[in-house]
Image (cartoon, rainbow, N blue to C red; front, side, top):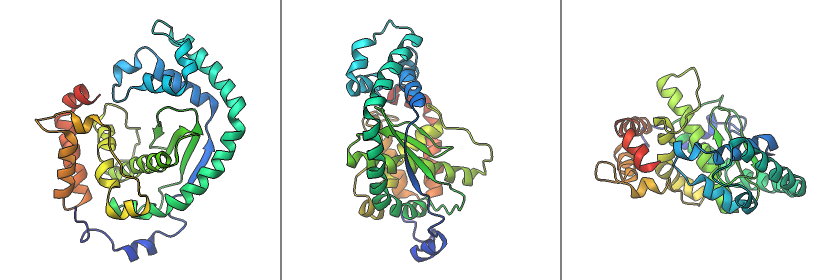
Length: 278
């Protein structure tokens, strides 16, 4: 997509987005209660039936074998919660010091690699927003990466590999920037977290490939990005959804046009996307 004529030039962008306006990324240790509740919810009986976008239970059991040994399909939700709470309380006690050390290490990595890329990401979305706010990454015991775009928070496992940390951080921040852009396009005042399987949730997940794999961003954070695998392999209207996304991105003259076309595509095919892509 050629946005050169539509976007502020790089010099102007850097002048306008001062150091104070560039969001900071803060690394903190995850609240144990949130960690327990989130993981237990993914293991509850009806969650996987509603959201099949990822194999949540399999991921949890791979990351935490002690849960796989103690949780079976016939357990009640409250019993599952109790098991997760007991296991994670023990893990937090034994690993908290290591978590603390990791906060400093990861903070330094993101300050050096990710934060300098944020002005370019804002430019990609043609978004100048002085009130964007800071971003918080919480380290804890997670097999997937939950997020809240309203508050610009996301959570990862504190032992996540360095390359995955960079990819996940850019992935989640991309969601935050998209949400602010979407609000600015549609002049949305009330805020509601995009939830699966709403069209805006699909939009968030499907555009990470083209918007984060631009030459300029990959020069700064050289870790190629992919959307969920099913977006490349499932067929919607006889073609993979991600193929449509990529072509739409190339053919659109502005980021606004790209987002609107993609959103309409998702709306028009939402039922089939849910059935085939989770």
